[in-house]
Length: 123
Image 1 (tube, rainbow, N blue to C red):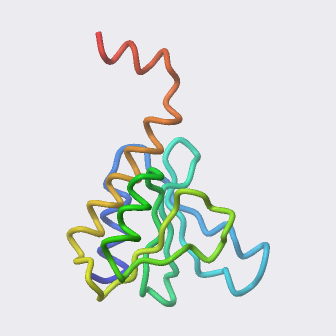
Image 2 (cartoon, helix red, strand yellow):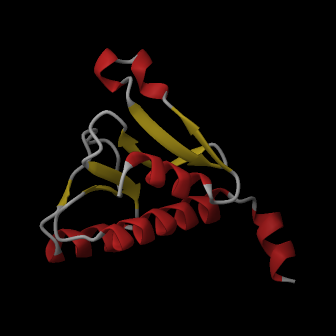
């Protein structure tokens, strides 16, 4: 997988936007590309060093991944609870990584979709 294909995949989800917001904190973060749904992050990666993808998951999913896989680590920012870094080229294939990105998108979208809109869609 390359960064162009990854970016195209993330942007294929409904309502996704991208930004590079962290450069204002430190120059070394200028190349961190973040994907958002409903103005909330669901995944990010470094476009200059595309060796990992960091995604938002549930606490149980994060714990399970840590137990089962070696190609996972904590995100660089330790204050990101329920986030996990998936290292490319390890024991998690590209297809699985894209599935985790999709899962992260669903988690964040469902969490921040207004309750009234969720009910209307169910009816």
